[in-house]
Length: 176
Image 1 (cartoon, rainbow, N blue to C red):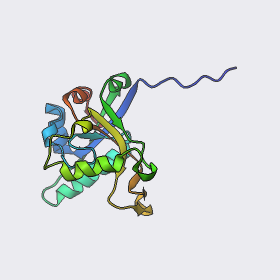
Image 2 (spheres, rainbow, N blue to C red):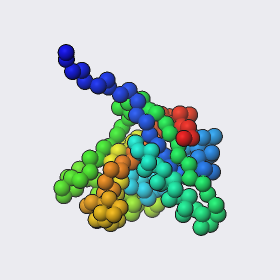
Image 3 (cartoon, rainbow, N blue to C red):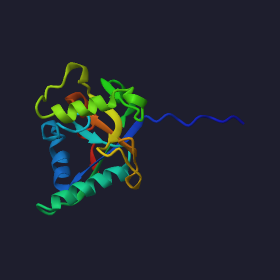
């Protein structure tokens, strides 16, 4: 008897946490990049995660923040994306926890957070269809919230920045 490796996955399931009214607009009209935050970790983009529980946490946090102004309900969107289609995108991936910022994650995040609104046209070397990496935090360490060296442990983010990238998820999103 020989052990066979598990079959290769052909799809990646991604999740986006938001509020119900935003989810309705996204499902009806598709993702509108101009409505996305320019100062997010990887710049203006539509952010997703591989973790349904992380997306639900984000949705609850957004709904709670909004509730101060008017009532909001959390919502989670899901899309399955073909892995070969993702491979065709111009992509940047950060592995996180690199000593001395060896992969450039912190420089990349700082630039987008500081220049996102004042310089919406990204520097040419930072133009990507999609960026993958860990979720960053302004706190360096917080064991209660599972933060180590400024990174949320067990969290990830996958951001879509161009029309080519959004074609892979628009029309494939559903409410879960």
